[in-house]
Length: 184
Figure 1 (cartoon, rainbow, N blue to C red):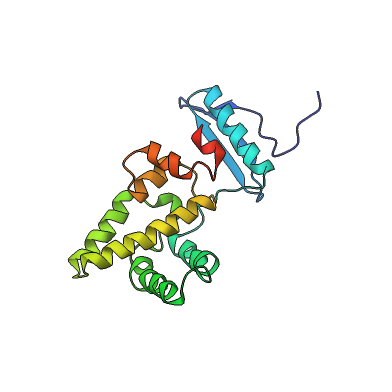
Figure 2: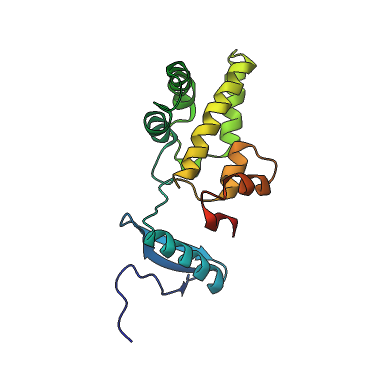
């Protein structure tokens, strides 16, 4: 049997002093990724998904992209030109004046529902009208939906909690058609 090339990622090893297994592979962007699991089967499944994503040219960069960077990209590439200019200006203003200064520096992969909820509460406590906070939520909601579509975040549970869906089933029903492997 021939030696596997670097990045093939088929060697599953036990993590010393921990009850975990791991495997490594190189993603489509050339970044080294490690997957962990409690069993070899769990790691094998995650590794298969990662290699399939790599073969499709897909990467998840939520650990390197901040919310602020994502909002800028979302406004320029997804919103601008697809909504009325006044709507774009309202989204941009909401991002620039409220969302970015408060939680914009947080990496997408580190953003938690508690941070988002705390942000909303801080805005209300500063005297902002509840209708403005709802509009802020709608803006952030749309931006995070796009982050999921762009595969900046992978975990459907993360999306469910940040978007405020009652159940993971609701999130999967709404978004799994963009990522077929998400429903597995």
